[in-house]
Image (cartoon, rainbow, N blue to C red; front, side):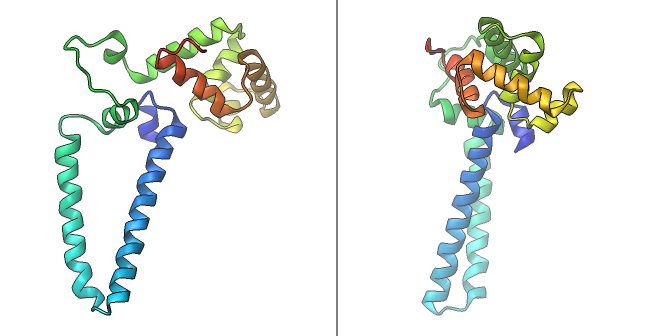
Amino acid sequence: MSDLAERTTLSAVRTFGFGRGASALGTTVGWFVAYGVIGSGAEPVAFLVPFFMVAAVLVFATVLLVLGQQTVSEALERMFEGRVQASAQPSRSETMDPQLVWDELCAQLAKEHGLTAREGEVFRLLSRGRTNGYIALDLNISQNTVKDHTRNVFAKMGVHSRQELIDVIERRMEGSPNV
């Protein structure tokens, strides 16, 4: 999931949420099947072998039909945005690397909110869901300095949590003027 989060403009939190949802769905189906087999009194092996064969065919068909010509990242973005690309001419943001688009948007927001250069770097890493320890190692600063910069970023951007920070970026990506 972290690799997918790096290759998409979706936030790491949102990408993790999709993965978590898929995992929960699989677990729910598994429990449903297990209780159905146990409750019916049927021999588990006689039921589970055909079930897993059908499940494998469904997964394979889903990959071929749903994902088709697109990557997993594109499928998640389209599902999240709920839109179909109608234009034949791709926009500048669609032809650019999603990481570059995200970083460019972070730089714009940092400038608009008056963040210092270092606060901008911390903001960019926070927006990708990085921990204080990761940010400290990446920027070669102490975790206490990361905490100070994080407090400053939150204050200047008018947010109270990392999720609110990510929401600010996602609203800007959607073109909302409330940022």
